[in-house]
Length: 138
Image (cartoon, rainbow, N blue to C red; front, side, top):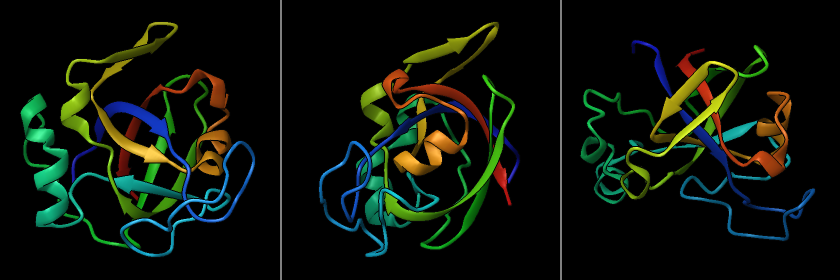
């Protein structure tokens, strides 16, 4: 998979942690807000049919299933983390063209949702909600 520059967000799942109450454990059944995990929009045919990143012009997105590890670098802080897929998401097609920037670094289209623990590990504030990132295989 070639690296993708895209927008990242965060979501709650599993056991209560930080700002999150208890929630479901995601499509993979393993998701927890306090773990280094993320949601990916192409974990299965069913997931892809919901998230539709192709609607935003994102083509050739690799199918990656539960447990697959991506390396992500924040374009705001330069911090790099490795997280594993624990859910399907985000619903990319709802946010086509949405753009987030920090300094001169910008990215469009939500492609990855992090648990609060992972989003914070990138050195990002949960209150910011969105951030430009570069995603690659671990």
